Image 1 (cartoon, rainbow, N blue to C red):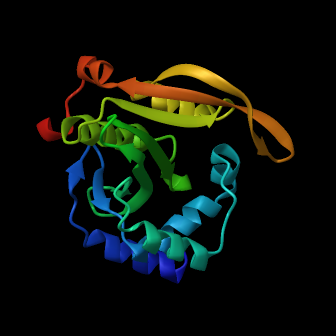
Image 2: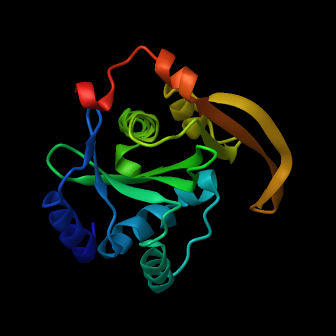
Length: 197
């Protein structure tokens, strides 16, 4: 970790966790988290799997400042119990009238494949259906992103379709999977809810 990332990690340990999962907590994202987010988004695996085009740190900070008061999104830092930041998750494109939103998740490379992503997504869906009037959550990823598809499947998301040749990545056209979780499907999941933990 760089000096900036160590400072950000120390600051995150002082965060108030506003929502909990089994093994992680969620804390409101601040503009000061830009260094962390920039590092995760610049990771080559994330850039390939998620299709991010790494931007400059200053442009990310400006975007985070602009989106701070955006009522169509809620962004959270994913934290371990000791306050270590390990990811970023969000509800984006929220439509409170229709009760829809899209989920987003990116994890620190060293914490991928350890079920933290599934736990963060479970906590986020509990927030969306338990505290917000959501009826449908959507996730979108390219069909070759097996790690994301696995996390979404474990969280109860169902693939409902494929948008063929929907994105250009590394000179190739890729299909994009569209997945969703409906309120009734979330209600039928046999797992403890965030407020039961």
